[in-house]
Image (tube, rainbow, N blue to C red; front, side):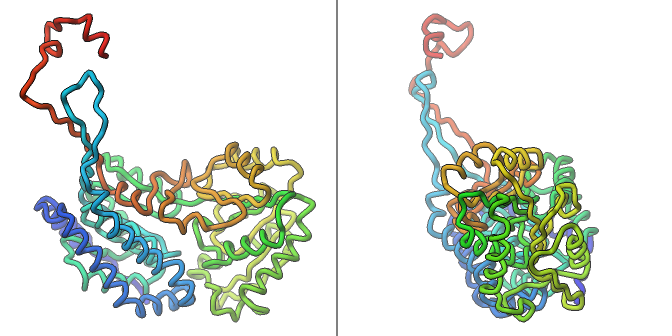
Length: 460
């Protein structure tokens, strides 16, 4: 199946229609926003089966994994916004200093306006619709751009959105990078992009022309540390799960392993056993092991098998886009597998003797989207304080994304801005400062020629 490009003329018409719709003030009322959130929730239930089938066709993603990592996350996000929207929209009181009395200060959350949301292929439902929840909640309109690499999912989402919303409010645009270029030539009030750092730079450059704010959810090489004090069996289980989830095609997957030299052999054995517990004796036959998204991705990742000594896994079947979960030992830091985000089920290992080596190794590289540490908690906090990452887990992987009360986002090369829960509402809102000054009194000392200056100086 091939996705057809949406014409530039249609893109222009959609953006203009959304501009007029937003200006009408239709999205401002809370009742309207809640109604649209409920419609999206109902649409997800109605389209559940087509979306699950499309995820299987495009990614070999099982129903269980699709529900856990895609649909349930979006549904939970919607319910969270429905519960709290009234409080989030409420005008906030803010303290006023004595020098401004008797004025009062308030903060009003107002919608930024027209939004563009561009999502990747690896979690094509969650990473497109979760930001949409924030846009609806905040009172914005939205142009959605799914990935052409998962055509069945993208078409199912387009049909679902078209059936549920008027395109002057929410619309789906399809196509390749030429369509992205046409989209980015239009003017929006916020752009929300999830993808690679290289494409993130392109988005940011386009946004800069109109001084459009951006939220960039990127990626990078997320380190996983197994220290001398780690419970190796637990570490292997949780790392194997985090690395084989979606076949490693996860922006916060453990990308490389820094392991204390005394734990490497034990970890290799435990990792093999963990993969067997997760996916059976033959991973290829597991209904829960996802395939590489396309041949290009398969070829790119399979080459990394040459960058170290294969100590677990290593089997590939190109016709099925299948790469077995693989551990690589004796990997030089300069190897290609250590230069770019892997985005596949290959985990290179580098041994260390002292934690200072680990800190130095991490801080000398770009800031990652996630950092994982296995070992004693007090040592973990030292590692967190001396490094930087978008998020982190101690004695776990991936799970920080599961708490909608925690911010999810990158730092530096791994992104800017964060979302989930209240932060999704804030991402699509402008927090507007308002000062209310009464007219029943008007102090003269604020005006020229500044009488009573001595008293004024004391108040400042």
